[in-house]
Picture 1: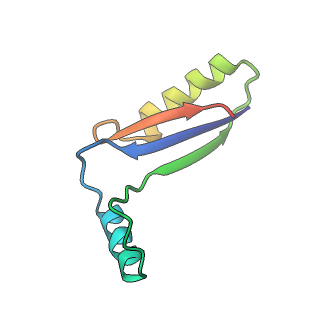
Picture 2: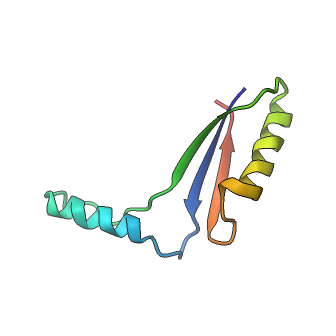
Length: 79
């Protein structure tokens, strides 16, 4: 079963990569961009047919490895 884990920095956590991209976009003439935040999108194929078990497994993976829950939030979706 396909599972997607979206990992984003928590609000208030500095995002130097996002700042660098914002400055680069401004240098390319895109002046309307006021903020850029960078995250990760992780696609998993889990050998599970039950949606809730797949979600639970992905959540355990995210908490243990995929996200640093001190500075990042994550969302799980099953497309």
